[in-house]
Length: 124
Image (tube, rainbow, N blue to C red; front, top):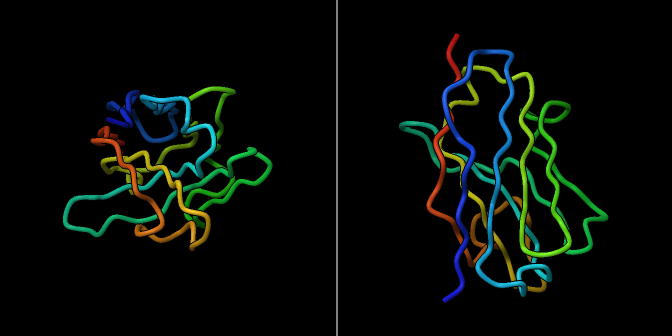
């Protein structure tokens, strides 16, 4: 069974940094679009960032642009470097992957694999 597992969440003060990791169970994920989404308490899950299969293109929500950086390695790992964190970044962060050939990378239904989430709390 293919799976994604996030790690690296935790408690950090405003202005601090965290790096989230996403480990895929199979190397076939190297061929997939990878994304990060987050869900704050009482809110809907929202797009944060995505990276293309070749890593030649990256995409960011306006709310995190300039502060977060998405990356991936040569195998089955994806990362989200989170700098200058704000209290409004507090959420459960989910790693996602898409084997589909087309669709909007900002939409949940583009992705057919999801991790369990890792919690990020930013204190003011």
